[in-house]
Image 1 (spheres, helix red, strand yellow):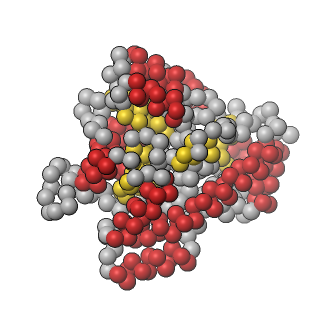
Image 2: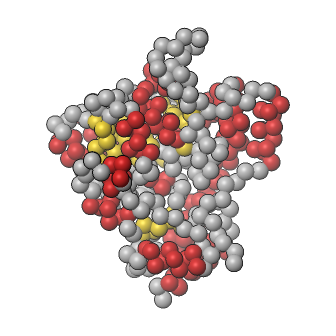
Length: 362
């Protein structure tokens, strides 16, 4: 049986050529190719600065550090995300404060965020807003809350390459933004990450932190890590970035076709796509009360699926000590199912996916 995969990275001759050029140059670790990738990615996001890192998690770690988040601080974030969102807060010595999600967007509910600030008498230092599945969070409202309380606003844009909010690219909406280039993402470097920011002080501190706390000379002015990106990864990233607009267009076209076919079904809720945002569709995530039955049926029919995420972060064993009031996140975790939406799908693939979903409920 032919399987339609949930993800299928598109790596071809251009990526091979760029990697070959780096190998021929002999500069395979951090170097000029990484600097060019940083410049090009910053330009794509309409941000002033970019700092490349070894993966999306180290980007989050370094960005929070660069913003001064540390021991004794609190950061509001979503419990419905990959665990790296919260882990990055904890590895900096800060405490994650979970706010519930909006039932339509699956992103942070601004009213729940405001409640967390009120509960802590405003003593919260940052908001880490996840653009889940490629849909930007409600940045306008979250930014107003952050400004009111003099808190930083950080975008977890690990899934949102190419998304926009009110016409502005993600990566340029907060004090800093963090991207992942894992193979399943909208573009990849194999493993890799990126921080974007308009703040020179944040970019400088982040660049220093990911390079053992070293400044432009051989002087280590703070304790840091080796979170650097390799030139090989950056070479792949530069080729992928050139293709990113067409990748996102293809994902959006596939998503439109799926929604056209599934939108009239009472048993399935397709993704919400609000008018102020341009959804990048890292995942096409539907919702069904019979999620597990549908998942098994699709996989028996050769359609790969994913559940992102089956357990909210505050219910993970590593977070048992963290109190959270997030009933929407808890219910959502039992009902979401991601279908293939990647650019390599053919029109026949998309029709097949929709037809099999429909047939399960007939």
